[in-house]
Amino acid sequence: MSAENARTEAAQQQKAGRLPVLIWLAWRFLPPLDRRDQRTLTWVAASCAYLAVPTTVGLAASRMPAITLLSLLCLAVPALPSWWLSAIRLGDRRRETALALRQARINTRAAAATSISRQILYPAVGSIVGTALISTLHRPLGRALPAGAPLSVAIKQSSGHWVVAASIAVLLLVGMTAALGSARSAKLYGWIKKLATRPDRREAAPQPQ
Image (cartoon, rainbow, N blue to C red; front, top):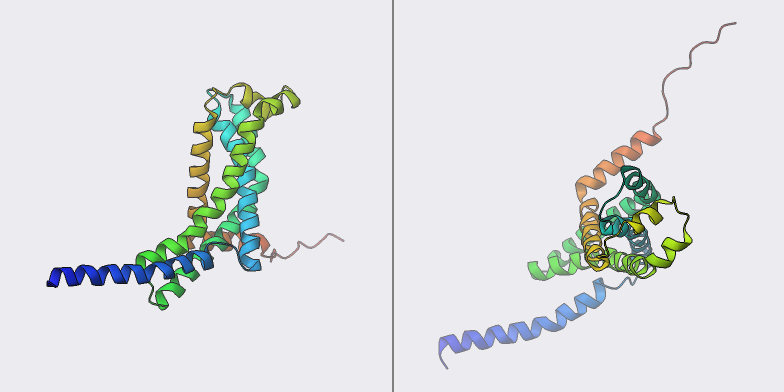
């Protein structure tokens, strides 16, 4: 057997031995097996599903008045805090998983792919559900809502490219979730939270007698 054939056979054996490990890693780290991961999946998916509705409607509209766009932004506001916080927890979990896999001497690429799998899957699940619902139900929803409602106006202005709008909305929400899960985003969230909860230390002005 030549040296080249020996190296090829050794590489094939190493690859075959690595496959069960990668399958185990995918099973262990992709599904939400513990309660913390289940809560994270619930909050991330629910937030992305809610945000997918105004995002898809806005992307599907061919033209939209400024007041309608502002109304869609206001419609998305209630989900923003939970989305940001759950994205930070998802990012922390990704970094913890990547560190644990590197310490276990797992291949760097396999560790990165395994750790980032949740950060892609969790928001993608919620985004796909939200875009599928609004893409399917936009016509009866537009008829049921009042004529001046923001969603109704935007749906009437839609150009019909709901599949394209839904695809862009899913990619956008997955990318934004990854950005919000970064370490800098976590520091910014902590600074804002600390600033908002800091007690007012100013002394009260003396009241005239």
